[in-house]
Amino acid sequence: MKRIGWAALACCLPLSLAAQERPSAILVLDASGSMWGQIEGEAKIEIARRVVGDLLATLPTDQPLGLTVYGHRRNGDCGDIETLALPAPGNRTAIAEAVAGLKPKGKTPMLDAVRQAAETLRYTEEKATVILVSDGVETCDADPCATAAALETAGVDFTAHVVGFDIDDPQALAQMQCLADQTGGTFRSAANAEELGAALTAAATVKPDPVPGPARLLFAATEAYGSTFRAVEVVWEVFTEDGAQAMDATQAMSGEAELPPGTYLVRALRLSDETVKERRVTLKPGGREGVEIAFAAVLPAATLSAPASGTAGGMVEVTWTGPDGDGDYLAAGPVGANDASYLTFEYTAKGNPLPLRLPVEPGEYEIRYVLGDGIQTLARLPITVTERGFGLTAPDSAAAGSLVQVEWSGGGFDEDFLTVARLDAGDGNDYVTYAYVRDGNPTGLRMPLEPGQYQLRYVVGQDSSVAVSQPVTVTDLSVTLAAPERVAAGGMVAVTHTGPAYDGDYVTFVTPDAGVLDYLGYAYTSDGATVQVQAPDTPGLYELRYVSTVAGARILARRQVVVE
Image (cartoon, helix red, strand yellow):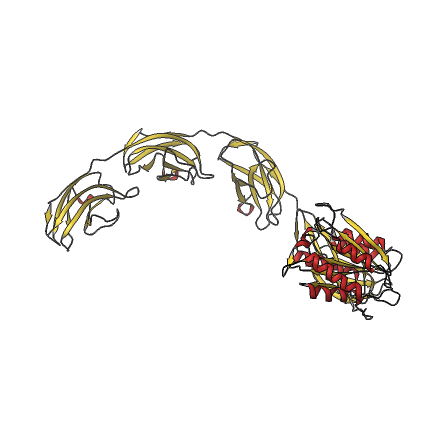
């Protein structure tokens, strides 16, 4: 939607079509395809024909009236505008017959139609009035406010009265209101035949208001700071053409003043450096005009110094100069990337020189000094990131749940980690078990409890990429449970087990349908090869389980026991 300027808010008052001198007028009628739409079962074009016929019968016979229509001949043609009757007295029958023969088809070039009607009326030489009846939004890219302002400026006494027929689109309503306001006309909305007739009659007979209201001046300031805008403190003054002060000095970013109609000089002084800018503005009776003054501020300077290259994922020391403002930071990222794009960063408040992590992928990059105010780059420095070698040394196979010592080489940064992942795993965040490399080298890495084929991975924490991987086979465990087949309810039962006895492994009684982590009486397997487990108090069929939770949860062995 086109932006509606401040002038669209002007409270311009209508001029009369029925003035004593009977100035010429043209009725501009919408004959676009949307006029086939129906209201209470009747097409809008049929309603318009009937209402226009009634209007013609009520207007004075000596009133020169013409007819311009649009959208009645061709589909999709923004130039489909035709004046079917030139303004003249006594031509009511010709106008009625032209309206009766319309067959809506095309688009809605209502602004060009109004302009063409104004030119037919010789609006730059004499008083001219247009009455527009339309049911839709402008569809040919014309700006209603700009068109209306141009007609009003060029015309001797040009007025456009607008009737919106069956319109609830806010954009269309705003366009029509702006057209009427800018030219001193009226805007009325009609929802049916009765309201359309009343609106047309009112547009043709509205009386002028001889006492226009005061004019209003709206003023606002902006400050461009690089590629962004920020608040700016300004002192405003307004002077008449003869230099008299029309408004007291006012400190504000924006404001509004009520002034007599006339031409004024608007002056804005920026407090930060006392820069002054001025604009002239002419206020019309009852109108509202806006003045916007734009200042510009220079971005601060910054410099960067660092080695020409560094290893992938490594640290590089950067010496910098710059404003060191709140939120300022150094960043490493792709060459020519936008200001907000980075792979690593560090705030300048942390020191100078400043250690900065490099990207993990080799290639050509740049270090940037980024201003926190508006996220704008003040300085750039190219740097080459060279490849870093990664390696893993570990057994080819290991028992399920066992802790394997993995030797590694690579970044060794605190956020880097080792993982065991499935063969179809995605990025570095897709894993079964993990351990941080900061825990030592070699690093203890727990194997999954489920046997199968897996991958050992070195994952770069900076971007979760997999630097290096190797296959590992996780073998199953041999676990057994020995206990009486029948035990007494509530009694202690001696259970002998074989298995890994990992930390947290336990033996427990559960019902046969219990979940993997459910338990009743239990004992940790680390207490010995034979442990005492209390039987349930309620007689029935139960299951004795060996459960491991060292890397997830898995039932490693089970057998049924009857509690009597």
